[in-house]
Image (cartoon, rainbow, N blue to C red; front, top):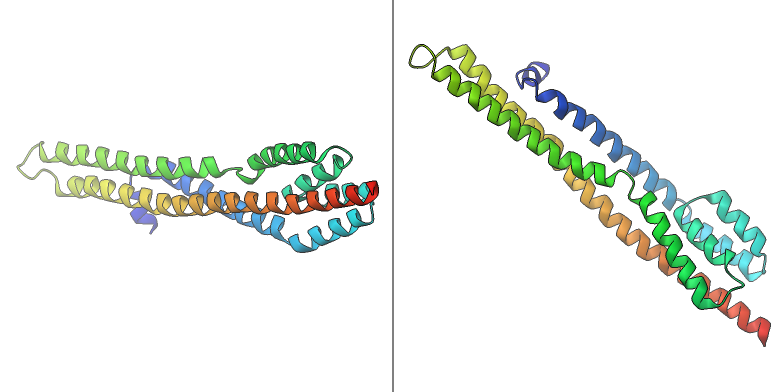
Length: 207
């Protein structure tokens, strides 16, 4: 395998660098999403229980301690519980917007790597073909077979390496982007339920 990679020439180095970075991003995002989804139902249940008891300060501390995007969004609703419901909803929407970059962290880089890897492979193909034609155009009718084989190997290996890096990067980028969209919709729905609970408590207090 190492010999095959070496035959890819200088362009195999940035392709390998892209592979390392893409692998890091894919693993880091996988761990992050698993972490923020852990005990999600329990977190919602605990916060609702505190709010039902009108322990808003305890609910805010709980949200800060958890530190997930969902907790931050619910914490914003709790922070604004004394305001009109329309303002609470607006505050929650703004908080969700602030949490989105955290959810999408590194995804742009992963998409960029997917594109760059393909282009680097294509660039290696072009330079390998140029070298191959240079070999064919020099000396004997078929040129130096060893040099010709090396040039063709560079073209093929860089193309293959670029695709091997690009295809998984595209798949995981799209998968994670879809996951973020679904997660944001779900979190906003959960926040809406909490807002309804706050509204109910306000109605009971006024009646």
